[in-house]
Length: 136
Image 1 (tube, rainbow, N blue to C red):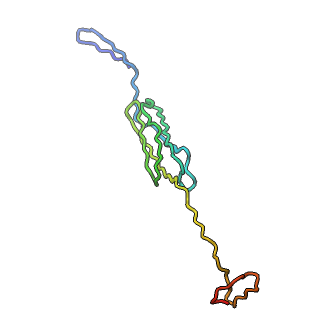
Image 2: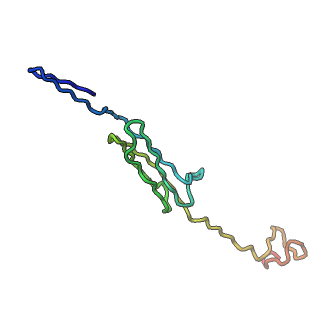
């Protein structure tokens, strides 16, 4: 930009400035979960929330670092804010659910006495070797 001024005596002065850029738009920020959750929205290991920032105007001044979530819990919120060189900012949010506890399986012991039908129990039958006293 160039400007020239003239005073009443006819003296002139000129000045040239560097180009002026106007950036009114916010930057773009996205949050990505690494590794991605399973189809039910859960992870079974620590998760890294990675932020990606971009700005088509003045350029990025600050982009948040990766954040690691390693505590078990549902819908743990993680946020990050990007700022461009013009001072505009934008935020991104991610929700992380972690369950590192394996499921517990329980087995019951088989019955020790044979099962008998409603009909009288006969020890000669193949299925029953002994019958409870109430069914003999």
